[in-house]
Image (cartoon, rainbow over all chains, first blue to last red; front, side):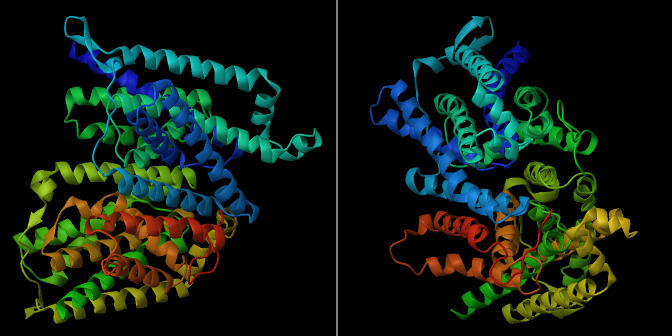
Length: 289
Length: 292
C-alpha cells in the first residue's frame, strides 16, 4: 500500500510539474526563448495567491490575483528583457544569463518581503482521508487531476483549432510569412508569454495549498521545467506533460528505496541519462549538434 | 581590522582562481557550466582529507585536489561533447543538484551537513605557512601561476583552436581540429584549477561543508565571470573582487539589517546580471563572445 500511496503523491506532484513544464514548452515552442524565469513566474504566482488569501480575499479571487501577477510578469520579461536583447541579436548565452539574473532577483525580493521559511495556505481541500485502508488521499488530489486535464485539453484545442493558436505554432517556423498574412509577431510572442505564464498559476496555487512555499521554489521550478522539457523533447507540449509526470512519479517512488534526500537527485539522474543517451527526449526532434 | 582585510584578500585570491578557471570553460571554450562549485567542492574535500589524514602540506593537498577535480571533470566533458546550448546548461544543472545531494549524504567522506572540521594549519614543504600573511602569499602565488599558465595556454595553438571552436564548431571541425580532445582538455584544465582553489579554501577556513558548494555558489561564480567580462584575463578577477567586496560594503550601510545582507547581495548581483545582458552583454571589462 505504501507504493500506491507514493504513486498517488507522485502523480499529484507530476501533474503540477506537467502543467508548469507545458507553459515553458509553449513559450519555447512559439518564441524560441529559453524562458528560465518561468520559475520566477511560478514563485510570484504562488506568493500572490497566499498573500491575497491571507489578507482575507476569497480563494477564487486570490487565484485571479495570482493570474494577474503571473501574466504581468511574463509579459514584462518578454517586453523589457528578451525583446531588447534579441533586437541586438543576443545569443542564447545572453538571454539565459539575463533570465537567470531575474530568477535570483525575484528569489531575494521574496526573501526580503516574506522571510526564508515555509508558508502554506490551509484549506479543507488538503485534509487527507482514508480512501482504502492505508491509502490516504486529499480532495486536492482529484482537483489536481481535473484541473490539469481540463487545462491541457483547452490548450491543445486552442493551439490546434483557433486561428491565433495555429499562428502561434507557426511563429517559430516563419515569422516573415506571418507578417505577410498581416499578423504581428510582436503580439503573438506576447500572447505566448501570457498563455505560458498563466499555465504556471494552477501549479503554484496547488503547491501553496499542499506542501507550502519558500522563496527557493523559483529556482526549484526553473530546474523542473528545464528537466521536464528536455526529457520530453524541447518545445514539445505533449512531451513536457509526459516528462513532468515521469519526473514527479520517479521522485516519489525513489523514496520507497532511498532517503527522501535523494528524491530530487533522482530526477536529475533521469535528466542526465536522457542528455547522454537520448538528447532528443521522449517526443522531440533530433537535436542540432 | 588588518586580520579582516587579510582574510578578505586571501579569499579574493582564491575566488580569483575560481573565476579565472571557470572562464576557461565559459569564455574560451564556450561551455556554459553551472556546476563549477562541484569541482571547487571536490577539491576542498580532497584537500581537507589529505590534511586531516596524511599531511597538512599545501602542495600535496593541492595536488590531490587538482587531480581529483580534473579526473571528475569527465562528468562535465561527456555531456559537453554530445550537446550544447540549452541542453548543456540543463546537464550541468543536473550534475550540480546531484553533487549537492552526494556531498550531503556521503557522511564518511564529506562529514555530511556538519562538514569536515579541524583542518590543521598548513605547511609548505616543511615550512610553516599558517600565519595569515604567509598563507596569503601562498594563495597569491597560486593565483599568479594560474594567470600565467592560462595566458600561455590561450596565447598558444591550444587557445587559438579553442576560440575557433567556440566561434564556430563546424568550421573548426572542417579545419581538422580534434573537437572532442580540445573540449575535454579545456574542461579538465578549468575543473582541475577549481580543485586547486578548493584545497586552498579548505586551509583558509579550516572547515568545509556543503553550504559552499551549492547551486548558489555556482551562480555566484558565473556572475563573477559574466559581470567582469567573459573571455578576458582581467575580467573574471575584476568580477571576483567586486562581488566579494559587495557583502563587506553592504555591512557598512546602517539601514540594512544584518540578516538581510545575504538577500540584498543576491538582489544586486542578480540585477547586475540582467541589466548587463541588456545594456552591455560583454561585461565590465569584456568584448562580446558566446555566440553560438
